[in-house]
Length: 635
Image 1 (cartoon, rainbow, N blue to C red):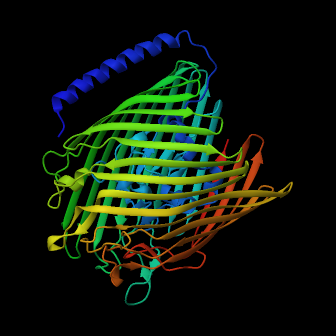
Image 2 (image 1 turned 45 degrees about the vertical axis):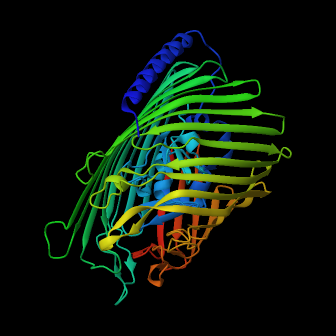
């Protein structure tokens, strides 16, 4: 149990430390005039493990219709995306972990709804972000509570000197329209970036019901709007302050499942605000500090109305508020890199659907050190101790060893302990909240090989195995109601493949491919569990995403293939819960036009070329063949 007087003492100590650090940084900012060097939040948080972070670059995203974060991930990673349909609720699954065990960050701020525990990927438009990266492994020691199944790291594009603007319009099947406008400015000490985005879709594609002729999907339209503002001021070449704000609103009509009454009407509205204020100071080229405050304000409204009724059968209001605070110092001394710091997170859900006591406070101390033993061998240890309201998380750690065989090849091993405490909904949701849930405790081992013979070739293989005690899963209970339950032990193991290559055949010709694949099992190991040895729900054993492209001058043609093996939406794998395996083919054509320093890119995508009838979640049909066309100006 958390000792609240002790927490208050820690908070006072935290404020005192931060105040002294700020005074020290301001004093040094007046005298330190060393050359400017970019310090990314990713780099300061992940330190040496940045080499294990997989970056999805601009060229990869340009070959896919990257409307939402879900599109980016399902075509450019081996992560599994679960979706109700285009623009509708979408979540992630990875290495046997569900969406509540995966973390998504923007500028270092966790975006996961503290009550629901997840992020709806359809509320995250891909064109708002300049950088999308994946931490494929559990990273509680580096990032804190919840990062069992990996993390997605989002950042804005860096602002270049001078003024630039962009304008992008996208049209598509089923009444889809998206407009994005952006502008950035940098001069002297100031830089600013603004992005506005609005989209809508009728989303009335046809599907085949169990009986009768194909019909349009009812009640499936959506619209959303976003404003993202980023401002940065440099006190000196080594000291800066940054403020960012992201406002969004999304309204989604959720269609009934194929097995329910087609006249049932469900509506979902998400209103979110994320704010960030950070202060970064470098004492030297290798040493510095980061001070950051973040705030997440999330309101979600859900209603469901049965046919013939005017008042909703179900009304659900899921509000959440999170205050996030981090302070750390990082540096380098000879062969040793280090980082020490602390975090404080305060989350609560003021909605009517949660019982009393729905408050969680997290305070953590963390340290990280990497030592270059020889020119070829390096070892890194990360540790974090966290104190959480009503729980006693274990000491989490990550031990990474890297061995360079030569300039092109590297072997690495990693052992980590990760954890996650239950979400507010899992504990307090009425009437199925389970206050007796225990935190998840995960031990993960990995071995990997990276091969980079040249700048445009990259090959990697990762073997992993993990055991999670008290794994939390929603399962059916008394009266048919689902509630969160602890599974005593879940084991996951598998292999992941990454391969990027490009060959220049002649001056104006090149061909290449991007390949991502995984084979993995995840199941309960307890003999008393009736579902022991059965693959976890919504977890395919095999998953691949492949893109081949051909480039001639300013033209590029791409062909894409995605395969997902069968999966189930019920833990007992009954026949009625089976989701068949999927082969999905798509293609794209793009052309870049240069006008001096300005350029324009036109794109045409045709999705589901084989007109496959498929579902990613049972009862939620996906569209057949459809198209998207985009025009993007940068000037």
